[in-house]
Image 1: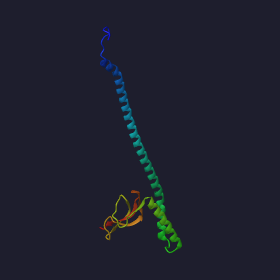
Image 2: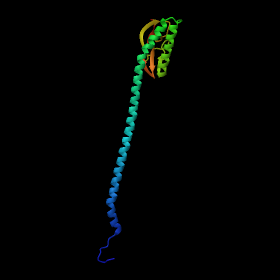
Image 3: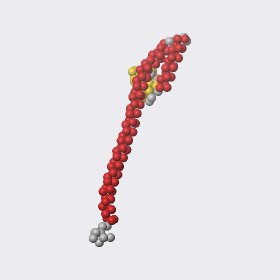
Image 4: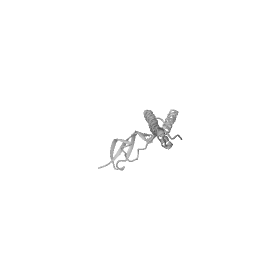
Length: 170
């Protein structure tokens, strides 16, 4: 050691040299954590967007299906009326009945469900009263007759049943 050289503490010198490196490392770690946080948020936002888009797509398909089935339901009504009027013993009537049955079965597979009405209690959520008849033969608000069948499509009301409802005779 040279007596003219000042004594320098090597541990203290290494700390002062490491401080800029340590500060840079801390800054980079903080930036890395911020970027990781942003990435996780963006991934979560994208997952939410994808689920929302899938749900909206399913709803659009469901709506389109219900519109299509709703357009076919009057054809079912026509078949029912024709079968009531026709001669049940003719070949033509049997053919019509087979076509009606195939159409009905196909729509049931797609999710169309008829609403039972006759003899049931009137429910304004699924029945549309077009006639009210005073009678002593039936309990009040009992459905006496069904003019047009109602339908649910995949659990939602597609068309209410048009019915005749009993009212107590006074």
